[in-house]
Image 1 (cartoon, rainbow, N blue to C red):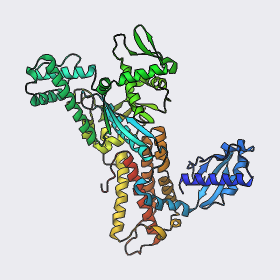
Image 2 (cartoon, rainbow, N blue to C red; image 1 turned 90 degrees about the vertical axis):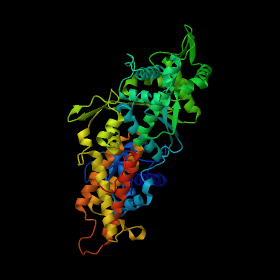
Image 3 (tube, rainbow, N blue to C red; image 1 turned 45 degrees about the vertical axis):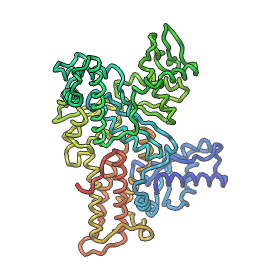
Length: 555
């Protein structure tokens, strides 16, 4: 019995009490109730505070209400006992057979286990990374690559239709500086004072000249345009290739330049004028963002007729909404924190609901340590540490897991020596090793012509050992953990759950012999435990897949 199934049983119990006239709930019974695993052993398998929540509405005290629920709930199938505790908590013990059935259900569900319909029917646009195509991906953008892709997988698992989008910033001053840096390199001159350095600039400049040998012979403006167009394409191709090797691919690469060429900015401005949220002052057009929570109103069209920086955001957001997305997520670095209020005000100015139709997630800094000392510089990039540096040090799996393991709004220090280590203190190794250990047991069982019990051959009541119960309850938590990670936008919850579940599995394995020894004849208990092992494999593999991390068969 999973927590969701137990919640349904409790709701049915409340419905029955209301139908019998034993309880009156003027607002009706809830469609789900909170069911949690108690912190202390001896308090049952699950606990609920439903009596504390509903007693006042029922016109009674929590303990009396809990007593009525307890007496009725104990008659339900799969419930071994119910105890009223404290001010009105219900501690519930599930029958071994009902709990053991979870293993067979997980195996039957396979790759779909852990999913739900939490976001069913929602169309989500998930914009992340979106680093300027002026250099290799630095570690801050790489954090969003890992977290954003994991969040996309989690939203998909909870029923949403997800579009991963990269906002390709190919318009503006940073592209001009990049182009001038390439041209200077090709001419054998130092980079401009405000330009970009690093070996990659020289690599790209040489590649442009190889492709266009006459580029340096053209008039200055034409020559610069060749380096701009070709250099941006080459840099972005490298970024896409790096992300693909990291396991991150996008459905849409949206070019900022298209907003300005297509008239999207004018359409957005016209829409806001129609909505009455703009005004003119000092020859400029302003958006009245202060009334929507921003610290001041913002210029959207400058007095010279050119669009201000915010104008591109207006056009891009409206474009997403016109493409049919219910929710638009933007993942930004810590240096953009002050920009959130104006984006929320922009959303409200369009008549939408901030933090529903538009949500901004802020990611904090990542510091990489080696031998206790911070890594400061990438030789190739000439600046901060890059994606290639990180993957080269610890590999894709460890990099993705490490970056997704922590709440994104906190700064993290990643010890590269730890994350490269093949030992149990390396979190990703610990979880992957648990999966490999499970796979090994199933292979050994197959060699003995012993298969997990299924269908009528599976007796869930045999899984009555306390460590089996602990593991079953841990496995049953995955759907709720995934739904919570989606609702809270926190993929790290999946990683921490996997580590706890791996530890629970190891304790089970140390206490419960799965395979027969020597000439011992296989029993139904061996086969039932193999079903539990197979269920563990499903959970670990599915959880790792949500983080974009492999589940190795051997280590």
